[in-house]
Length: 616
Image (cartoon, rainbow, N blue to C red; front, side, top):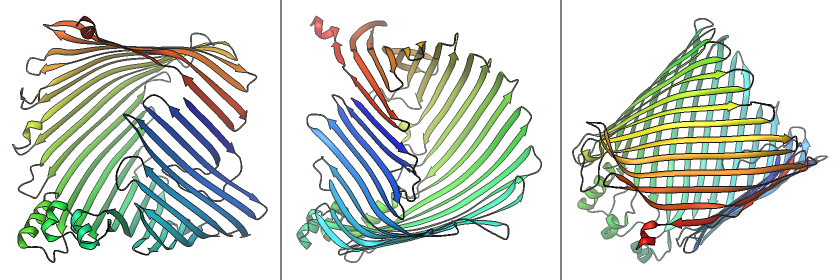
């Protein structure tokens, strides 16, 4: 069952909280519920802001719950609630108070499956000329992480400057100061970033940016046996401190209206230290893997591009070169024996790596007329990955090339079709013999046709036909370990047709056919020995009716069948049959201009037939 609730009002929000990859700047309430025999999901998002004269309220809540139904139910719940009541002292200044609650629970039997925090704070917002925005939250926080309770001060000050224009330069900047002192834990984030842009002509400009932050995070992890015995604690505290620096520049230079050059580059440096409050016993340090370490990462990338356009022709070419290094080292070695230090250093050096990647991209579009167009896209990438440790055999070269050409036709009345041919070539080549058994080359060919046709005003049909072939060839084959070259070939056909009998009454018909084959592949003679064959069919007709533009109701029937075949002496033999079928219904309620409730329910009957078992 799937339930969706959507509410949206036209009240402008003065404050919007960022929560889990989604930003809502308007009032919204959305709920999704899904439940079947194997899993269940419930997700709910609420964003509400309203003001009454000078008094306002903001509520943000994001709830996610997942249940996996195996021999027993495994669940995972997450909720983030923010509530703020504020008073607009002036047009550019507001003051208020708020509360935040965040909790996470996991039904798996682990020691880190429960976290909960409560935060009470004073909230201040100040705006200067709608260009400089300052927000501060200062308050008291209570946190429970895997049974460890900490309380104390928590505060953040954030200042943002948007589109400051001075002497023909456009500037944006941000400063964040965050600090927490929670008894046994301390966290902070000090961050600053800025970008400066200048336009020299209609299509010539330059933008430079720079950013830096220093983060410190303390979090609990279950204590290892020696730590628990030495210090009589259940949990250890891991301190992670990170310094990050980034600088970059983007230049766009135009010779004329048809030709534009682009140059960009950036450099990133990051160093991360990981330290434990309680150190493991020296005799167990290697076995328990509890020691202090440091990681230094550097990344340099340059990009050059050319854009050329003329009448019905458009082209783009980009060349990207990047280098990345990562170095691990051991720190705070007091109390360890030389043999232990040597073993730990060997473990850290095994993680060191350096890589260089070169990529090129070409994109071409040519419009023959207002009804016909042609396009081509090609990209290639080469990666060289090296380690600087003699006992690490992960050194390798990787390559990938993607080529795509298409033709599109649109009669501008009732028919359009796009035919596309894609080729994907990739390869993996380990340098040392210890890993060379994994060396392979992969080739994928795909031909796709997508069309849409309206023969009459009441009928609309969309069709997809696709043929795909995938060939993977290993440099060294091993029958014993089953490392053998293989092939995968597929035919896919889809049809979706809608027939509008009346403005409020229509039929939907959806059908899919997929046939695919797996086999052993001989690249030298380009021969395929089939191993398995599958045929899948899906039919889903349904009828829909709109009642007074208020309720949209529909009923339908879904049938899915998969036939699985094996090969015996070159002959295709039916192995088993899998079917699911049953009715389904849907009701959509349009409560007003900005509220929708969508209810979907269905019944699946599952039939599995195995001829081998039936004949035994």
